[in-house]
Image (cartoon, rainbow, N blue to C red):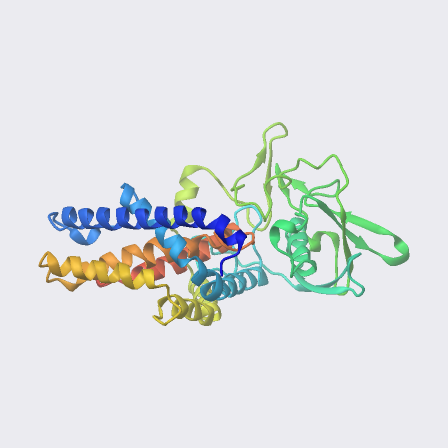
Length: 388
């Protein structure tokens, strides 16, 4: 028997469902019109490749609504593991805080091509919310902002990113026992400046060694609060390549001095990769391969948990292809690829922060773009020419 509360909600439910069915009917009608228009073009397989028409935008939103539960309950966990694996692998080695190039990268464009000597430093983090010290591994070549980001990840590993303090909210203190403590920063009175180049402070600059005790404290205002990495740090996705202080005529660098004139930019982006660095690139790909395979298997496996909307859409595309006498199976294949893998999954591979409460750095972003491009290539039936 329906309760009074149910009766109150019944009219609203009827309106909502009526609207959903109406949108569904409109989407189906517009899709059939788009198919009819596309089959009369020279390249019908390009249908749904872009998001320009009303029906293409409707399809994008409809797929997002239909796939929400599946993404949340099935694919979301493997996407998070993939993101975490890439982030961990990238941060194992040196990452230039200015150029965002990394020793361990999936992207050729973000590969740190210079040999950087560094050592792993194990620090102990003291935090007021933790009874015991937290052990965290960092690199002695890490800039102070990078160290803060890694320590925040260690301290707040079970806390969503949006609920954590940012690196701009805390100061990094190095505790010396009876000797007191020292606040570390990317730029301070000890920062070295040579011939107009000012280098970001690193743990090596301060002489931090294994078993050093660190703490994150509420940030204090100081004269360097608006320095080169104050607003453009490791956790920022805005580029700071070639950043310089106009008033003082200074240019900042971390691991590599980046020449940002046009000729050097062209040479930097197109210079060949030495064999040793190419091997490292392939090694990085091998390290995260399992997580890539697991995620792709999850999103490409047809099982009973996959939303019925996917089968309905694919059946519609098959029926329309047959109705218009299209004999080339690659056309229907392209339509399906454009509607689900390329329209839906590629978007979330490139932007996991759309569904996960995380922070995506530029290096990780470039690695995810490589994986997304791999999926796009795999969905194509044309032969691919192998490059570098």
